[in-house]
Length: 232
Image: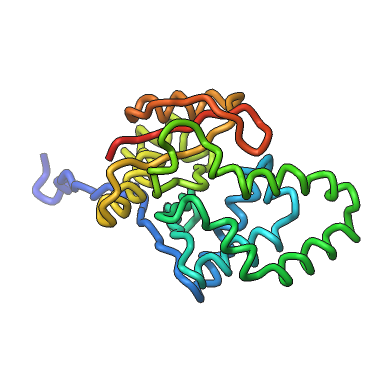
């Protein structure tokens, strides 16, 4: 080898950090971006719900803006790399939050509904089930009325549930969101919490069973359902 021949040296190139940036965003009154995100997630992931039938304006203003303002609901969003991946909505006032919310903001709710009916008259047939849902929480089975905490809404976008995402990120967003709500309940001295899930929706039921939930069949809002109970 000649004296002037270059000597190749191995250079360790640092690998880029591909770990997703994750956080739980607690949505509070005045967080307009958070409210917009949870409205979008609700309409995308729970479009079959009776309240969602009245449109995103109703969900945003009546369900989220007013409920946050009146401290009737807690809302948390899972963020992955600055994007909304999933959400959970929960309360320690399970028996009356719907009724209290609509009673206080009745005129506003009526106005939004009337404008929605004018645009889409077929929505009128959705009203009976929505009313049943509002008043059905007092008709749940067993000792459910002794359970004051409830996970009201919950969902994760499909791309964040895929095996590939879970393997690469080590994130199980559904578990993290529910544990976030459960921690809140424990801090408020709740020993059990409940969810209400349509009976024809087996995938979430299997997920809740894997987290230790127990089920009681019921009819909720006129629909065969299960009351899902978690011991905290």
